Image 1 (cartoon, one colour):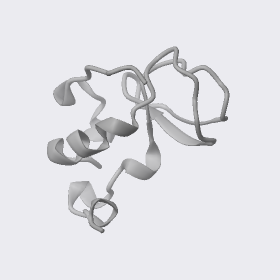
Image 2: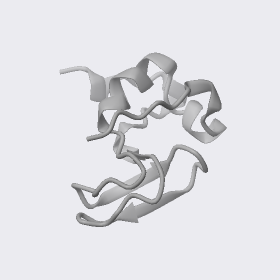
Image 3: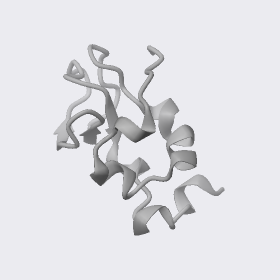
Image 4: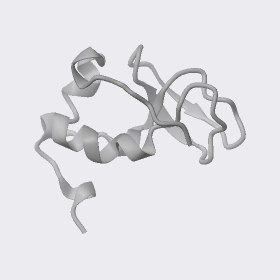
Length: 84
């Protein structure tokens, strides 16, 4: 897994509206780097364009992707997926 250097402030507004900077630091471990093999079939959001699409296990990531289940919703107010 490659380390992806993505600045929070450079991401599309749709992502920043649903993930605080602190939550993004927690979600960073789930980023699939551009060119890496996708390990899970699920919906991802492209960190550069903000486009959402289902990618399948074994596909090559066309950009830096974050699984949409890492987005918190409620404009970053819902932390339930980060609490155990």
